[in-house]
Image (cartoon, rainbow, N blue to C red; front, side, top):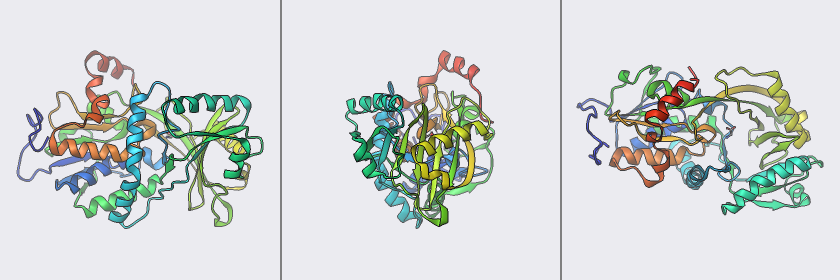
Length: 385
Ligand code: GLY
């Protein structure tokens, strides 16, 4: 796009002092794009009044291409798998560039069911995932408990997805800011209300569900409430795997960190507020303690809610905006913003430098929501601001 890719430079702003790239939004996706672009020798600025305060501040940080492979989402699953494969290299490179760790852990994920019905539900999904050739293996109840003795004796069974890992999103943002800064990225602490306020040859809108107001794309807020517990006495949690499952029909995940924290999440609500409700906390805590009883003794340290940027097909929107020369979108990552950060950043930086979209992006371009589809969707969507 900056170096004369096919048909891509018409209308792109020019000028000796313009930044090459302005990124609107300093969540993990925006920061990683900025970092990757600066590594490619581009002059980059990031606009955000409150970096890292969006969905990533609440996110659990599961890197779960297998456990989050859902029926009918083949193309999204392919992108999740691709990005998860990039995570080990990305994590190591980032930690070295930033001089700080990001809590990347590779203990794997257990998928469990508390009751026979819960187990049937979990099995229905993992059978589908196995059918796609993804690495998830059913375990006998005894093998499950050998792996995680902290699981309740009532847990009926489960499976292990050894390649589903985790990272700490708050540490990720801190590291990305440091790495981007060291690579020469500049900061503009402003809230962008309109893209005409942004001066750069290429603008990347990575503003989560705020992208709807800036671009007209059908990105809607999907509320998620979760809470953070802490193991007593500054200890570490009594389990090491991420545990996901169903407890009496309630879906829940438990993400243990070296710091002693356990993230318990999350609701999925078609709402645009960030209130924390007693009912949601009750359901999450009950499900968490049903699966891992020792959690009842942990300290409750935080209850919070965030807004995932959802799209009509649950897949991200990445690529050039039709009819808006020099404007790219990298948004709509919904439940997958953290796992999709490396691949999004790599592919957007490549697109900006070469003007050539990687074939991996083909199912995720903004033009799938154009014309009548976009108008109809836009009239229905709630926005997050
Ligand atoms: N990826 C987990 C969530 O959105 O809750």
